[in-house]
Length: 260
Image 1 (cartoon, rainbow, N blue to C red):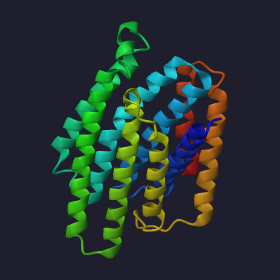
Image 2 (cartoon, one colour; image 1 turned 180 degrees about the vertical axis):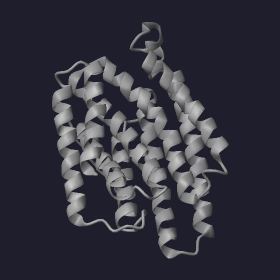
Image 3 (cartoon, rainbow, N blue to C red; image 1 turned 120 degrees about the vertical axis):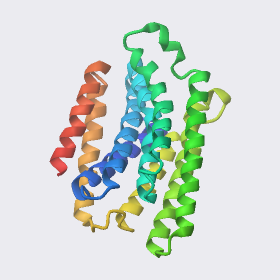
Image 4 (cartoon, rainbow, N blue to C red; image 1 turned 60 degrees about the vertical axis):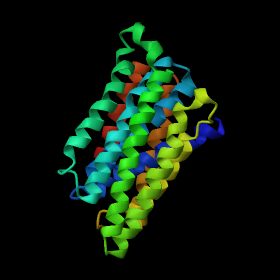
């Protein structure tokens, strides 16, 4: 396994563990579901990318490209919940969701329509995604910065600063995955790992959900996520992508149930 794949696997483990933490320990928080969905989405496309590199099955690349655009509206949804403006800006969230969701159509259709396959990952597809992602995350950063200025609570200000850093790092490094055709090295896995680390610090050290989490619980969730991720990669090496995708979904749901 290459260094890049190792980082991607670590990012998968971290994202899945954080998602399970949201489900298992913070179900009453309005931030729990948005963050869990965001982490599961990143886990899904990062894992699909690694599965494609390991197995060489082209369908994994389509799954990767189908899930990647969803990160943008899911990230915005979480940030709107954090700053308390989800209801006020729901129209903006819908617009971003439609713009991002439209990019998911071609990768899904690729399983049935060969004619759309050249569009997946093309310069046009990447330009569309980059435009939506950069514009949306810039808007999200402005919202977080305004929230930071208006907040008088030191803990909340620290959380806001860390989230600004997470958005910045995740965006700057994440977009490199779509800029390979311009000679830019792909650092998306590094960005997702760093983003996961920052989100984990916010959730655990600064009590994003206003609940304490024991070290034993964190260790349990990390072990659970790590075992699930490694087992999935081993299985995906030998299964067809359509079957493996079902296994991925079933395993994620099962882990979430077990964690609760």
